[in-house]
Amino acid sequence: MTLEATLALTRGELDLAVELTCDGVTLVMGPNGAGKTTLLRALLGAETPHRGRVALDGTVLFDAARGIDRPPEERSVAYVPQGYGLFPHLTVEENVRFAVGPGPDAERRARALTWLVALDLEALADRPPRALSGGERQRVALARAMARAPRLLLLDEPLAALDPTARPRVRRFLAEWLEDAAVPALVVSHDAADARAFADDVVVLEEGRVVQHGPPDTLTTRPASAFVAALVPGLLQRDPRSEPPRAAYEDE
Amino acid sequence: MRLGSARALPGLARLAGGLLVVFLALPPAALILTLGAGDFVDALEGGMLAALALSLVTTLLTAALLLLLGTPLAWWLGRRRGRAARAVEALVRLPAVTPPAVAGVALLAAFGRGGLFGDPLAALGVGVPFTPAAVVLAQLFVAAPFYVLPLAEAFAELDEDLLWTARSLGAGPARAFFRIALPLCGPALLGGLAVAWARALGEFGATLVFAGNLPGVTQTLPIGIYAAMEGDLGPARAMAAVLLGVAVILFVALRSAPVERLVGLRR
Image 1: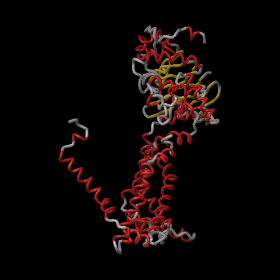
Image 2: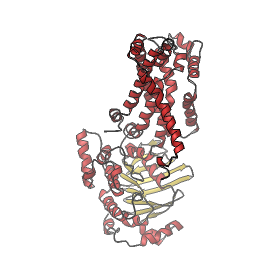
Image 3: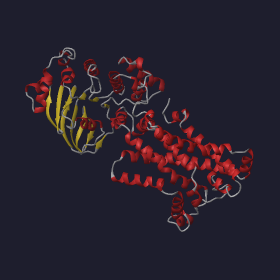
Image 4: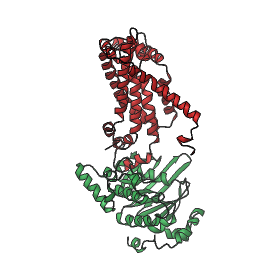
């Protein structure tokens, strides 16, 4: 599955113009205001670029020149916003069931439960989101995203809402999960540790432009900007607890 | 003494607050305490049931119109930030600061004989003033801000990411609205509806000017009280007590579990 996106849009101070081809797990990094979240929202269809084209494996989701702009619900793009976006008035199970396609209620419930079991959440099925820990919320958000059988995942700062002590463990979980999910993903992050843990590629955005795009290794050898250079020590740091076996990615 | 808690209130301030509580409690208590059974008999003979029925039917229609017309308007107002939205918001707020008698005259100027739309409507055989329809229009005019504005504020504070997440999970705009936005704004919706309904139920000035005081046609319970006042205070007291009871019951019922379940606030 390949995402090809060329898009340009202006929102307030931000002038975003990017061209991307992504496979696997792509980490989107950059300073605040660089346009990371806006990029995800444009791919989702929450923002309309004034020019450009977005295609998933050849299926056109957006094409300004041809007047194509498929609404978010028809894009098969799962969006997990910062803070996970769980619906606070629904239980964990109802949150996941919301994403399950049409069908008899009992069947939809069963399918939701399958996803809860897959992420070890069945014990929490009847809890409201506010009764969950940060890591549990993230797992519910991931279960819900997968229940829609998406063709692209957009995760905005999936670890930022966690307290620092929980972060390495949840990062490890997320790394394994992204590998199992086998769905291309764009993950916005501030943390070089995420790049080490699960990124096939890193895209660095600055002031709405892609300044560097490549595997984490190429960033450390040839940093393209001061921002990237500042990331290098973090990218090189060895942290066995959050480091999944490198070979797993080289197989793909 | 912890600052910020009710205990931090000095004695004099507590006395001041207590005085207001007593003053607010006194009139309703007096109304109930001075009631006699004979008052009700007189009130029933004075057409209280017809007035009560008219009040209930017209306010029910007003509430339905608010839900149907006010909810989309509140959504639009809440989700837009532009100059047009601010201008419309000011317009919606206007009835809340308009004296009811002024609202009645303005409604006559719009729909009455010789009014802006009165003559074209009359040519079509539709006469609005001094009909039950005029009662509903007067209520809708004065009550609309109390429903629309709090709901618009709640829609504005709604986390937009929740709606986009719902869309990304396959929900069309309608499903995202009814399953996510509306339940999350349910307290504001019910609260606004309760206040607007109470305002419509108590509507007097605009109704009297625009719809008149025709027993069985436009005489709502508040106007019935006014008509009864010309004689003895007894029947007016009985009608007032009934109106108060209806208002309290409506207010409580709108926040009750079955109603909350209806809008998805509870399961």
